[in-house]
Image 1 (spheres, chains in turn green, red):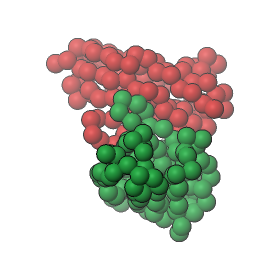
Image 2 (cartoon, rainbow over the protein chains, first blue to last red):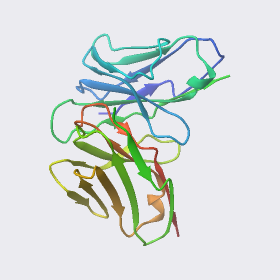
Image 3 (tube, rainbow over the protein chains, first blue to last red):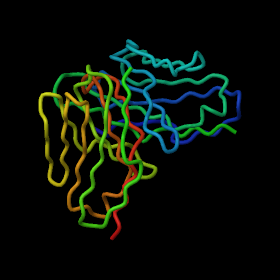
Image 4 (cartoon, chains in turn brown, green):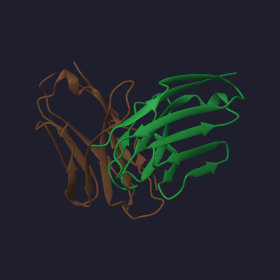
Length: 115
Length: 112
């Protein structure tokens, strides 16, 4: 078990470009979460999945953001027509989804910088 | 929706002293309260969590208390060490596998 992995670790792009991030959860974790963290703030919830079903999206998530988890394993987060305000760390987490002592485990994140 | 507040935003203590971070939440449906530690440039890591059916939980030098009536919960770190220096986030959720709402964080500095 290698933990939650995210790719890429860093992404620098020009405003207006599209970007896509990938998250591989801990194997057999059926819940997968996306959060965004800006400097000096706590992570903000964006969306989460149970298997391939997207259960909830934050109202913070504009129409330019889309997330998928097509086979219930890895997930992708796409941002279209990036804006300066999208610069942040995008964190992925996973959990087993069962009751009990099953906290969310975070990946190292993808840092997005918009030029 | 849920809102989590956290105080203080920065905290500086001498090595060996105790540190206390306090949080409040707004949604009475929240029953799960994790605490995460985040070192600079690293992922948030769970250090302790508490559920609403208990009022206190301890793990070595770390303890958390929960007052569900007042919607308050606190983190206590005793005998602080320089390696405790980090940003600490309190958080709230309905369950451990629901979305987690984080507080704004407390930057703890332990001075040797």
